[in-house]
Length: 198
Image (cartoon, rainbow, N blue to C red; front, side, top):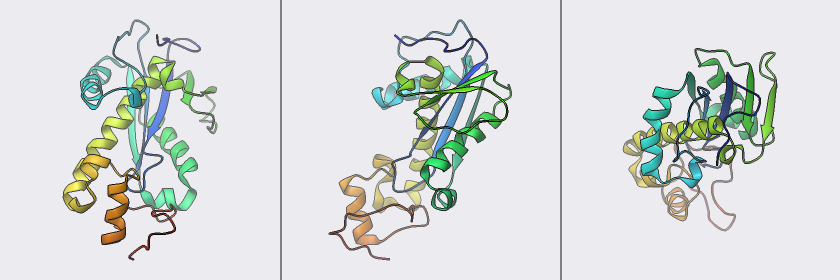
């Protein structure tokens, strides 16, 4: 059973999606839920089916006191690395909210101070606290929709299905067709034994 708050009302949960992908942005979301919020389906987005995530997205958007979602592109990921880009994306998602949180809870174990607002990092926080779980659902659904749009530009990589993650199919397409402007150049896109066509 997910808990409502770590430190009380007006608390923002934040999470990201796409950190381990070979292509596309890292997407972060931040959510402040009302004290009375409850949903029996809500959980860590990785534990939910795509159908349930799509069902939850408009409910979270409607019920949240505030939410923000931001895509951070591959240029920034390649420049400052994926960890720093993930944290920057979460900061930008917090900026994107119409309410200023009094406290921030973050999925994972790394974060940088945001303004003067106290925060706490919680490992597997998306399976413990509703606001982080809600942020994980928004980050995942927004990013998936973004990758589905990019799929039409480069259908040979099948991003509609793999969303840019390092599946066998995706890596075989990179080996065959080379890389696109959406691939992360700072990542190892192929195992050593496969030759990359640039």
